[in-house]
Structures are given as structure tokens and as C-alpha cells.
Image (cartoon, rainbow, N blue to C red; front, side, top):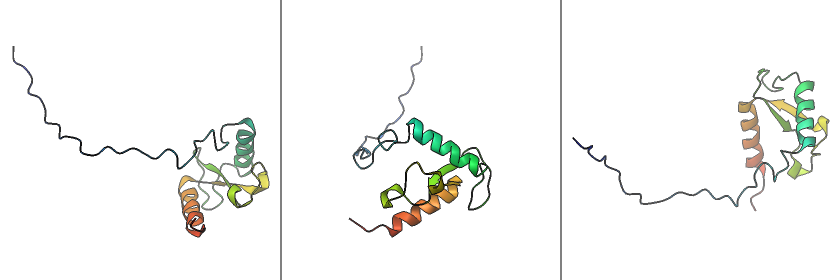
Length: 103
């Protein structure tokens, strides 16, 4: 009976491990509790699931804080929320990170 020829596997020279200590998970950041889910639903419903920046209507839209919590924004205030599509949310987050002072 013929045997299989082993395929070449290059030796692993470096293992990459993500630094998990840099950022807390979603539960630790408060995104899994009932109050956050209710806030998110209220923001998305108020805006009609449409991105306030580009107008895209999608079920994958994000509820975003207008004024970030780290900058003093209220976590569960619906007036501090807006609906953004994934692309607009990423753009806004990049702009906010660029404006943060380096610590």
C-alpha cells in the first residue's frame, strides 16, 4: 500500500501572541450589560438604523458615543449617541485616536 509523502512544513521561527493586557474585553468595558443593550437599541431606533454621517441603512450599524466616555461623555444618555455605519465609525475612531494626547 502506498504511503503519503509528508508535506514540507517550514520551522516556526517566531510565535506571535497578541498583547491581551492592552485592552479590556467587551464585558469588562461594559458592553454586555442590559443598560448598554437598551441604550444601543434606543439610539439605533431613534435614528432609524441609518448612519447619520452617510445615510447608509444596515443591520450592522454601530451605536456610537458622540462625546467619548473617556472624554467625559455620558455612557447611557441617548442624546450622546448616534448611529454610524462600520466605515464611518472606523473613520471617527481613527480621528479621535489621532487627537488624543500621547501618554
